Image (cartoon, rainbow, N blue to C red; front, side, top):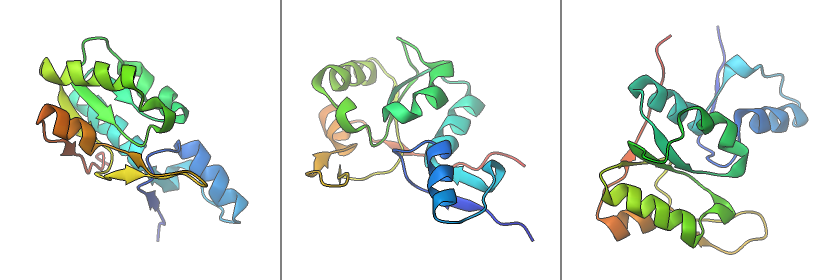
Length: 141
């Protein structure tokens, strides 16, 4: 019987999640872990889309291969300090030019340890009147 660890965290890379699980004493290999950012990257690769990713810096490596200044999609996750005016404006303009809004999660707000609440994905949804597609994706195999 196989075991798989799935998580919906959108602010940590699979490597960060693995290190955390190892620290808690779980013997987990990378092929036994599936995260929301990994699902989103697989989903976009399968669709061969170029994207603008408004994500936590820890996820840059995962989303870099298809980054584009003229994206087909804007990917939004818990981006922390990256949810600044310049990046939100760029995402807004991409959406107004026809890019699809794809979100990892539909949280109204997020909070990090010791932090205040911050606006999340619905701000772009409200500003552009573009509904976010929430992808639940498991790659074949």
